[in-house]
Length: 75
Image (tube, rainbow, N blue to C red; front, side, top):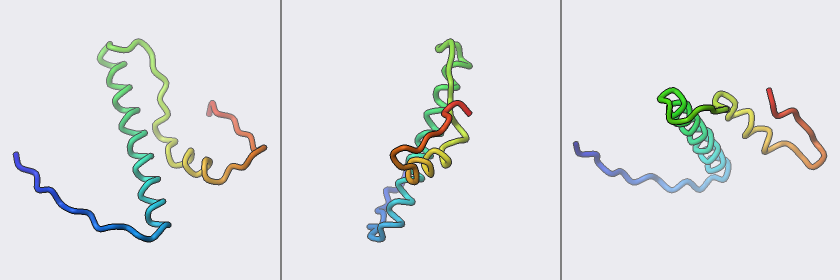
């Protein structure tokens, strides 16, 4: 199978760069959660707590929280 390598355009807008980086982080987090869940279902891991579904909220919290702010991390 041949996959053609494409060159990506250079992104210069800082807002676009930040949005693409946020998407990359959310996508990576979701993929790692799926990988961990697969390990549990296949019996290679006995227990796992995964945070899939909360990626965007966590990224938004990380950008807007300031020193002294608090939150509950369980739900």
